Image (tube, rainbow, N blue to C red; front, side, top):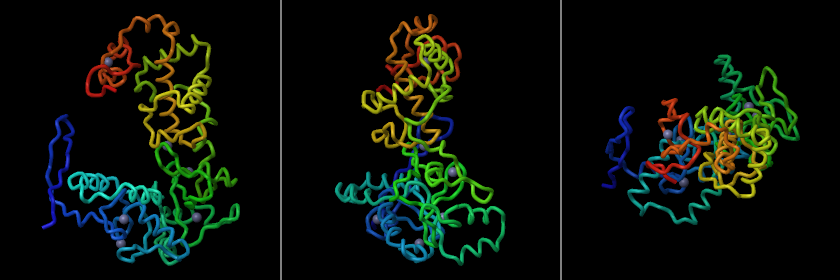
Length: 359
Ligand SMILES: [Zn+2]
Ligand SMILES: [Zn+2]
Ligand SMILES: [Zn+2]
Ligand SMILES: [Zn+2]
Ligand SMILES: [Zn+2]
Ligand SMILES: [Zn+2]
């Protein structure tokens, strides 16, 4: 019997202690039918719901480019959708942890990862037949899905989609764009790996219409080209007292928010600030030229404002803020979120010196 005990952690909603639930799982059921290893960065295809390594399936997709449709490598059913499966990813990691003999060599993993191209869910056109079927079933939404990509209808910049073009769905407007990993136009936000259509259509000069939604170029832009007018709601762990103090510090220093952010973007770009607290994916790869979405930009600004505050000479602090002691739990303090007085009387823009979150 090849099965092993699989430990599964369940966190009850009210209590902080965690319970463990044991389930039996056969690692044979967690293998990719392309490479025959336990999945790595597992993706699931629909509608047949078979699972593969991201790298293995990405290679398969590339090989299908010239074919009229993409078939599942396991069951040969037409694939209409593929996306990363975060739930199974957790299982994949736990299996490898409990049986390290199933691990692959590092070089093999690196190669596999270099093939992996599925970052956000992909919608795959599976031939003319299924399209007609969709229109015949005629709910408004389904027709919209078909006509949602401008390049399916018209040629722009020498490219038009065909039956086997793989599409990305924009996270913001829900519109479709062809997935084109080799033409250099940004289609994903590096901070969250989600697909956004703004930069792509903006570069091609395509505007939206009633038939197809399209985002403006403002929605996915390089960090250095962005402007910021107000302190994001997320800044200083949403502690509005600290946000107010930061606002005061800016006027004391005679600088606009934009001045300070530009200055700190340069420092980040020159690797003069530690990125541990930057809560974005691929945080080490981010430069001033990186395209990010609005949400990720707000996170970045909040991170930079933390650095502005902790490196600010004390005399720029408003009188009331100057005498405050640091909260032991620093930015990780939970009390600041439900106790107004505590939030006001202690400084929370500092590193924790107590608790489990000490850095
Ligand atoms: Zn594989
Ligand atoms: Zn299948
Ligand atoms: Zn298209
Ligand atoms: Zn983002
Ligand atoms: Zn969009
Ligand atoms: Zn506190």
